[in-house]
Length: 201
Image (cartoon, rainbow, N blue to C red):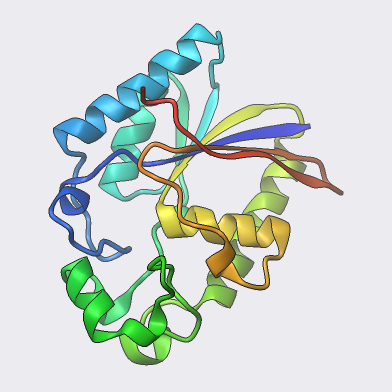
């Protein structure tokens, strides 16, 4: 069985500034984000959980998070783990996007389908398909390993879409910064063990 420990990056400088940060925005961790990642590292140490292998988004905030949590592990940077591309919305204030394009968000500010028609960014289905391939590859190539995956909020949500086949993505909030999700894989099964666990306190 392949066991994935999937962590959203710690708070980035764009997060702290309230800026929508997709695959086109590449800011480092804030001081708070570094502390969050260190707290996750310490929580794993207490459980004597160590990773020989890490898969991470190449974006700086996720790469830094992976390096803090598992500094001695081999890290493979995978483009499929980059954050969802919000297109023209990337880099704008989150509050402005919610106000100007309210029809693409639910009451809890979850992104709704078809935003790419306006933002010219990614669509849910194509990103989910890439992440589905990613999961298949891990189950096939690393059948007995514990693997850390460092990625991004909406990408993790779509990763779970590949596992749970959620018809309405609004039923699942994005994980918070440094939130931990655990998934177990075989070549024929995928099991969500827990979602968005807080190890930072």
